[in-house]
Image (cartoon, rainbow, N blue to C red; front, side, top):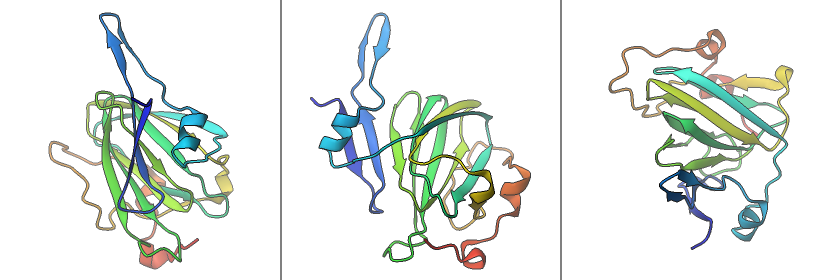
Length: 182
């Protein structure tokens, strides 16, 4: 068995990564990324920055992007559970404006790759979540943008009393208003 299982998503370029987990009475061990294994699977990626966030239940972060320095992101959950989403913003893509989402958790250990030229966001489903991601380009504050979270994504809000946003995430435009295309 390989160290990773790669599953292509409905949107070209997005994929789910399931690492091999080796457990015993002490706990478990897994690789979360291996350049050689990713390349062998056809995913030749270079990561330049790692980020981590902590959020409580109901926090919805996103949908974020960078306008001229788009970042690809390999995302995973260290603790808790989130619903993670990527929205295709590639102008020439047959799936422009479409989204794909997956539940990522510390239990299922799945990761999701969101390519450059996508908007990204997630909703925390558990009481608390620790979220980590590797980026293919550096964060550039003045280049940051986004689209509003409520663009027809089927967010799993059962059991969530209130959605919690940052001030900027509440003010993004819709995709149609922003007309963001790469």
